Length: 163
Image (cartoon, rainbow, N blue to C red):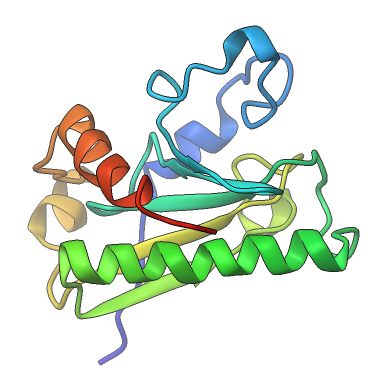
């Protein structure tokens, strides 16, 4: 049996009106990492919690530079982005002990990108049976951890990174 990541309620988010500007591009005055759920800032990319997670520990790695194209990334940006993806997977595996992990990018609206103007890599821990009756019948995801608790616990781990 193939697992299917089925989230029809996400369409409401995708189709909802968006704030002006890019949510990943913060002005200097707005750089409050905890408020914006940013766990780590690398040289050319950063790790952020997903405000609309599919599962506990759903994180994203985002290049600092505003771009909607993976092709436009420089070698240094690409290497930094995927080095941070690798570090993030390690932290998720050690902390959440998932049975699997989805890693992916939705580039463009037609591919399902909710934020199509700034590329980002989703890292989603998975467990057998993590899609249950609540998801199937009630179109509701159950995320049993408070964002604040997850943020502080993971922030401690990311603070130990030397990337």
